[in-house]
Length: 281
Ligand code: FAD
Image (tube, rainbow, N blue to C red; front, side):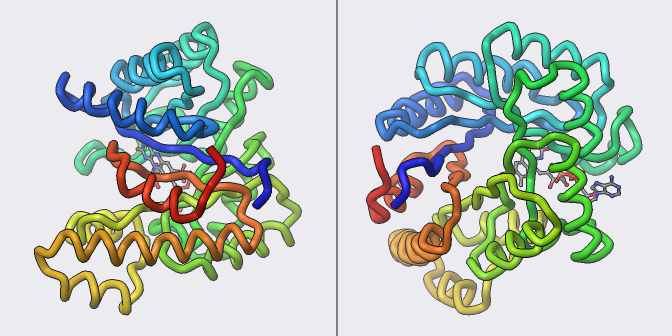
């Protein structure tokens, strides 16, 4: 397995002190595996502005792992984003995950001065030059609002051409869609690393809800088995661990340049996969 692959873990900023302490405890546990970076999500429209900022700063200064804030452009003004970028730059943050974001329903789509992630990538480059390594999102199964697959591919290419350095995918449970996506964008002249986003399976009803919202397909053979386990969490976790480990093996054997785990602020499920894969520590 190549050593220059990159491995990362994603968190979301919590609302309570207890949740935040739990996040830090999880991060400390994950830090012993020497990941390349942690990332922390951002509530579109700035709803988690301070919490994302504080979490990222604490992950760097206390947990001592490079941390990348997510930043989204819908609902935020250029002035807000400029301010945040300069705070991150001053704090020595070197990587940003640049997104359009999804405003909570009812807030409307048209607010903010930028409408698409490629506008944000361009803006970050204009404001801060090459200071940040910019990650963008990729959708091997197509973004749910895209007009069609070809249009979505072209929009992904726009983000790369606007100056993105690498991409993290939406999660999926079918390695073929990842390989197909990578092959198509390579044929369109885009060579940035595209790292699969991995969602460990631990809870069926939550996963089904998330997947409906973000357009990730749970294949029938997985869905049916998870449904049949009902409340048997242990069996769900065992089955999930096996399915995700096997998919990650396929991805890495097929040349994926690393893995990005959506931890949901929990360590065990991601680490089980990491250990099964015998990833470097
Ligand atoms: P875009 O790349 O702008 O794409 C959105 C849609 O618009 C697509 O359908 C695309 O085809 C279309 N499009 C793109 N550019 C253009 C253009 N120039 N003209 C016309 N159409 C265009 N959400 C959050 O709110 N906070 C987070 O922290 C967060 N983190 C995420 C991390 C990862 C790794 C991923 C995969 C997603 C994350 N999301 C987050 C969700 C993301 O914000 C949503 O999926 C959102 O709907 C799209 O964001 P995007 O950056 O992919 O947008």
